[in-house]
Image (cartoon, rainbow, N blue to C red; front, side, top):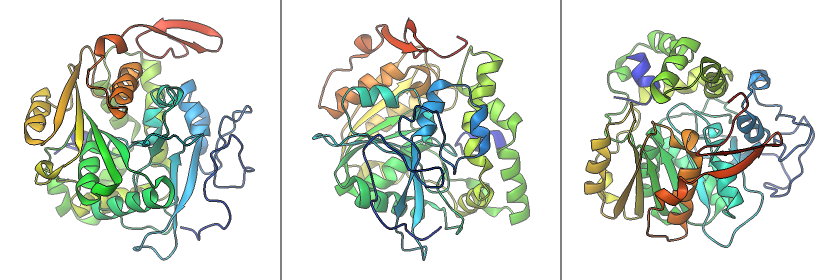
Length: 371
């Protein structure tokens, strides 16, 4: 049961001064902002020290760009310094905002983010309240309503324009919930292997608090995270699984993670089945052939229930295509955001050339060290 739930199945005062800088500079180590494109490879000081163990160059690069932006919320006396990856420039087109899966972080987008950015899009990768690397020292509530309102306030304060909101897995439920409640903030939706037919956290809401904390402790354990990676990814080496595990549980090492997780668990979690037919935005559904987490038939059901949705299927890919096939996902998001009507799957899957450590590799996914 813990393993299934792990996959998403059934503050301090605001700092004065400039709130957001789209340049390529960074403050000193003591600041809340991470470095953007820092040639020294330094990480933001608020990340757990275990970030230095990560070998994946894409994860390391994106981790260096994580910032904390002030977000004022009504349920906390002080603003929440909220973690995200911000764009290096503004675009005339509507921005693309990337959410993440259950109990994850913006690092999930490590492979696809640079492709979207290179295409000229204004891209944000946002950590949902309670997950990721935000400063939650004040222990704010992390239920669905709080996550929704926090995202809205971040959008209102910093993004400020209708967005293409992208949600993978349980992040699709968060995207639907947000789009229905704040339709003025969302122009389009992209839902990837959408995990939206779940009844929240179910029986976990009835757990006594001590047992809930014990379950949270198990949830962040290395064996559970390893098991999750084995379900999500096929045919990857043990060393890669280990590195993916380091990336995936990094946020769990922050001191408030267990409190935030238990609060979400006992609050009931996401149940958006009654909201699906109320989505008014145009929706792109992406479903993967080898998804071991969400049944492909549920994507077809979701397409039928959404008023304005198209579906694209990706072959030979599992639950997290933005990691397995980032070029495919990037192409689909780019075309959809710019109003393209064709799937362009075949074009997206053609080999493209990337350079990592001066080594050119022609592949259907980004090259990684050791592969």
